[in-house]
Structure formats: C-alpha cells, structure tokens
Image 1 (spheres, rainbow, N blue to C red):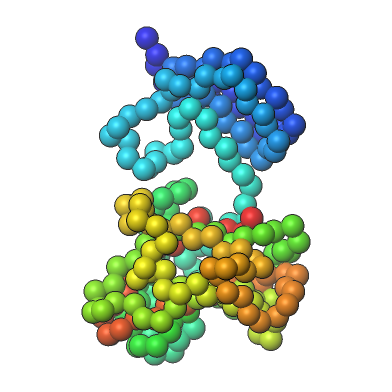
Image 2: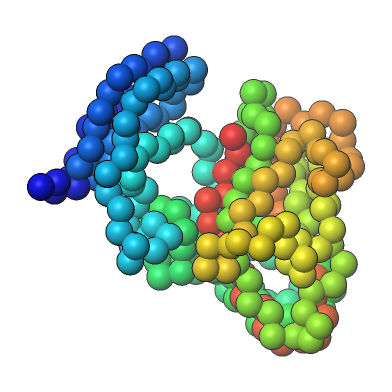
Length: 243
C-alpha cells in the first residue's frame, strides 16, 4: 500500500545528470529538480505517485510524478509587504492593493488590485511605487505572470490589455503590446480563470516591442489596463517574475 508521502529523488543546483532505470512509485513526488539543467531521464517509471482528482489546480503545492523548479526573480506578488510596494499611474482612478491568500495560483498569495472608482482611460499598476528594483537583465529573457480579472463593464475591455512597460529610467524604457489578451485570451483552457502571460524581453511576433533598444537594469515596471464604462475593475496578479 502506497502512502504518497515525501520525495523519492530531490536534486538542487545539480546539472548534467543521466538518470536511468529508476522506478519510484507511491511517493508524493517521484522526482524534484530545482535550478538544474541538462537532465536526461531514460527508462524511468514515475507513475503511481500522488494523484487525487479532487486536488484541483495545486492549491496545496506542486506534486506528482516529477516536477522541475527554476529560479526566478520575483517582483511584488509575494510577501507580507508586497502590496505596499505598488501604486497606480492615473490620477482619475483609485486603486487599493491587497494580498489575497484565497484567490491565488502560486505561492502563499496573489496581489489583488481593486480599481474603484475607475476614472476611464488607461490605468497603469506600477511596482515598485517609484523606482528602485535595480535588477540586472543580463541573462534574462522573459517576464512572466499569471493574471485573473473581473470586469462588469459592457463590452468590457478596449484597446490593448495588458500593456507591459519596463523602465530603467523615465526616458529609457521598453513597452510591449500583444493586442487585447483579456477580451481574446491566447488559449481556451485556463486555471480557474487564470491566464499565464509570457513576455519575451526582445519581443516576438505576438509581443511588439518599442522604446529603448537596450535596457541593462530594470528599476520599475507597469501593467496597463483600459476598459469601457466606469464600473470597478478587479485584477489579480500572481507569480510576476523575470527569468
């Protein structure tokens, strides 16, 4: 009888591994690799590990046959003081930021932004409030985050959503637009209303990039939203990170 507890094989910061002929069954997680690269897994069996149809989308952590975990630089969606690091760029709107431990998809909480009143036009959510991340972008390739929204306005969103802008300084920035991803999500299957957004820092065929050619340091960023109507907007952001 399996008890589905613990991790059979756990490797941290280990690379260039060839794993062969391993049978690991009955664990909570068969194989967990953190911050590793170039793993070859051959003729291994990680089946019959933790599986519960009622488990949902991972409210109690990641588990299963095997999981890969990579290091990322988090940007204001985790920690007790994270909400205090945000502000808004739109004097006509008021935004209340709070950490939400109930509506989340990674970690202990998400960031919830309640825009009420919504003053129209584009409202930009900024982290940190002011400038000062001082995050070197050398070796980084993407900005990632999960987003969930509630918009009671009809017909809801307009123009581009979200607009992502990375700032080194007020005059040195890169702005990314990919159409209205909130009105037309890039895929149909979403986790309980969450959409995963991946923004290549050099832009691509989906994400059009404009602004300064090269940004060496990220000091702040904004996520911009534009809606029809004047009803309140609710936006949840989770797992915001540069990797």
